[in-house]
Image (cartoon, rainbow, N blue to C red; front, side, top):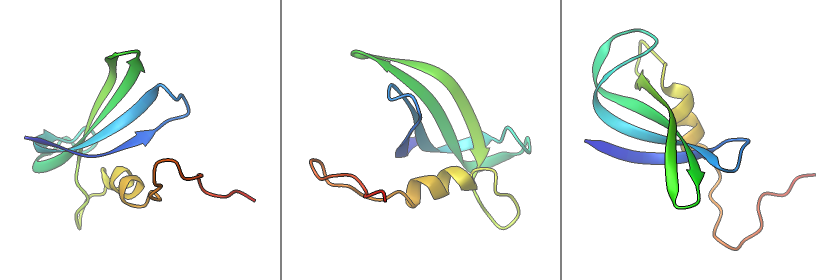
Length: 91
């Protein structure tokens, strides 16, 4: 089962990182298999098609490891903008 948590834009407007919550993931950093983890899929959009550039798998943040913590923080701490409203003000 995969559940989309959110999308993170990159410097290239055609490339995004899709963050999913997945079952039974083997973390790429600690090489531990965990029951619930994070899958990061880097996707490039070209017209109607999407091309997968990279798959990454991390364990979720808990008391011992924080390999997926930066992705969860980036998703949950993003400001919410309504469509059609101006973006954040920069001084």
